[in-house]
Amino acid sequence: SMLFPLFKLGMSAEMAWRTVCIVPAAVGIFVGAIILKISDDAPKGNYDEMKKNGTMAEVSAAASFRAGALNFNTWLLFVQYACCFGVELTMNNAAALYFREKFLLSTESAAAIASLFGWMN
Image (cartoon, rainbow, N blue to C red; front, top):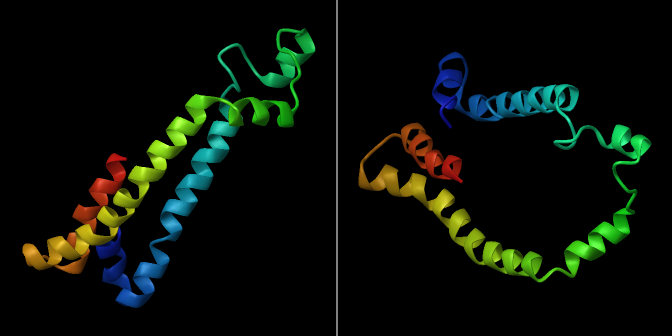
C-alpha cells in the first residue's frame, strides 16, 4: 500500500497495483533464502548434526503431529485464534473505506494508513 503511489508515478494505476505485489514477494523470497543459509534449526545446532551426534532422538512426523493434535493447549489456541481472525479480516477490509469516507483521503493514502493495522499483527 505504501509503495503504490511510487509505482503509480511511472505507470497506470491498474498496472501499478499489479506490479507492486512483486516487491513483497521478492523481499520474502530473498529473506527466506538468507535465513535458510545462515540460521540454525535449534539453539543447540542443526537437526542433522544433532541426530548424528545422538543429542536428538528421531521422531516421526506422524508422532509429532499426533502429540500436538491431542494437546489441549493446541485446541484452546485454535479456538481463540479462529474467533478473532474474522474481526481482523473485517478491520483490514473496512478500515481503508472508513478512512477514505470519514477523513476524505485518497484511496492510496487511506489504504496505506489502514495497512498499519495489519502490520501491527
